[in-house]
Length: 479
Image 1 (cartoon, one colour):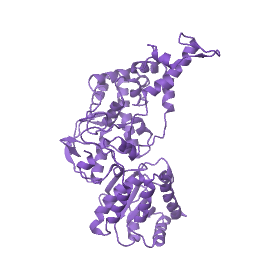
Image 2 (tube, rainbow, N blue to C red):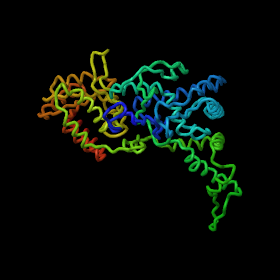
Image 3 (cartoon, rainbow, N blue to C red):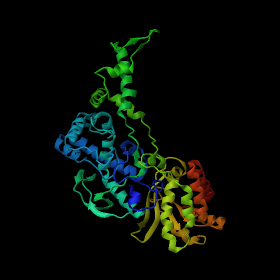
Image 4 (cartoon, one colour):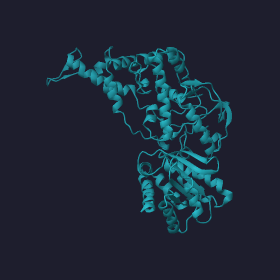
């Protein structure tokens, strides 16, 4: 059973910002700290800073001979079953580190270049160099460290998608300000079979980690050893008929001195830090998140998405105040489908100005390309603010003024006005132009016809058409 089924959300993975986890087992997806470090949205950057803060704190302790403090901090990176991510086939079983393995992690860090220099390069190095630390353990370590942010995210999404929560103990939480683990406090989280659930944003998960010790070994370490053996003319060198000297990778792999183990990679990297540095520099800086289709493939019972059914659902909602909430809830899912992964973390009915004003839906701008990346570079657009108007008639100036009143230099100055129909499109767009010309922000209206067109583009995965759609409307707005 998936979370969406248990909580009767009436939404698919495509309409949800988080992983629609199976509740009786795990889904083989992983949180990658390197992928987090390359993202530019506010949530991911905050998570990346917390990860750096934790391991830098450990490195500082090691450098200052506060070994007990370092061991204490590492020992709380224990099993985390709350996320249902990983490789368990039955009941979720976390793969954190604690006890003896946390001591092994401490000893490896103590010998590492990071401890000697006092600076941490990346948690991901652990996957390359430390025995027993694999992708599922790196994922659990990461989620342990950023658990406070994930709890905040879960609480926001529970409000957005109407998921019931209960007061439960959070477990240990890393406090980056005080540099220590805090005792668990009571927080609002969803529960399944007396076990808390922590939701993970789709943009954070991957099939595997970008850092891969096998690729490091095959493509960097062995190639270095080939050159080294040739230069010193060892017994592994073979002379070809054309007179060229070669060393085959298969011969290196068969040699006990060079066999692939984490211990070998660790010692090799200590002696040749430049090779490890070359590998890390080779990694991509732009790592696209998994698509909804990719995530569905990892579910035991994967499902395709029926766009026609969603369009019919939109058409079936009558305009008016009685169905305003139904329309609002549907639009959260529709916008998720259209804009993911450029707009993420929808927050429904967010209070601002000490509760005097409410924003219907707020999205974090996470775009690395296309229309929303352009907005982020040229106007204040950290967030995209959306207002839902389930009216029978055309919206007018009061609706525009309400939306522009939600703008600010910090939140952003771009918004989307969602409504059912606009009969006089030219007149209403002139109203939007007036708002822009008066420096009160940039508003693009979308009625049902626009939404249906955008869903049709998404159904054939025509992201360029979606970007062009908004670019043309924005150009008309400002020209």
